[in-house]
Structures are given as C-alpha cells and as structure tokens.
Image (cartoon, rainbow, N blue to C red):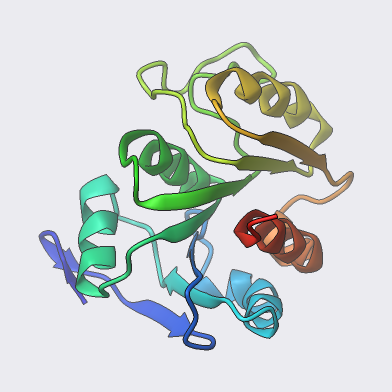
Length: 183
C-alpha cells in the first residue's frame, strides 16, 4: 500500500468482524512475530492488520494506512519500538482507537529503570490500556505509566519473557481479547 512518501506491506487476515486489531512489531521483528497471537485472535473473531516492517512508519503514515484500508475503530497493539509508536498514536489520535495493549515499553514520559525519559512531550492516553512486561527491570516503568493513562489501566508481568509476542503469544492474545470486549 502507498503510505506517505513510501510503501508499506501489510498482512490482513482473520474473519470480517466489527473488531480490528492493528499490531505494530518491534524494530527488526518481522510480522511473523505475531503469527501465534494472530491465530488466537482470529479464533476469537478478530481481524488483524500487521505491517511487515515499522521502519519509516510514523503517526501520519499509520493513519493514512488505516484510511486507505477504510478501517474506523481499531484496537492498537505494539511491541518495543512498535509500542512507542502505539503510545504516540493513542495519545494524539483521539477517537480512532478503542484500546491499547503494549509490550516491553511503558509510556514515553514514564521514567525507565535508569530514570531516563524517552518522550516527555507525549500526552496521556484516554484509552483502556494494558502494559505487559517480561523484564522485571521494566516493571517500575510500566507502573509509572499509569499516571499517563486516564482510563482503565492494567500491568501484566511475565517473568523471564524477553519478547512478549514471540514467547508469550497466548498471554498477549488474551490481553488483547479482554480489551476488545465491551464488558
């Protein structure tokens, strides 16, 4: 698909459904990192969109992609660098996203374990949000992210998991399904 000044190849799969999930992989991860997650989401009657690569994607490009696909409301998911983009989208594109699930990254304005802040200019999000962390050192960052979420907020810690989508597909899919459910 033509997006912004370039092209973006996406995988679209799953049943025609009123619920769509946009999954943004981390830098260096291919879309197959979400294969196990997508399989479970499809079984839960959710449609999935996964960019082949997030290199060069920004907020404008993602919004253009969703417009091109004629997708209204989306449940937003991101891992690592894809999570950073997801936080930014959720904070700045009010009314387009229904929920946010991120893995291995807290809100950009939340300090990490070393006290560093990646993005103090990122506003708070007003979406039901789940932060999943595998590295115990990221737990404080995940907890601190709650200050930047003006909605239901949940932290899920998965000890010993270095790449949540690859190593904890069932757990990630469960959290996504919980966020797509209206109850």
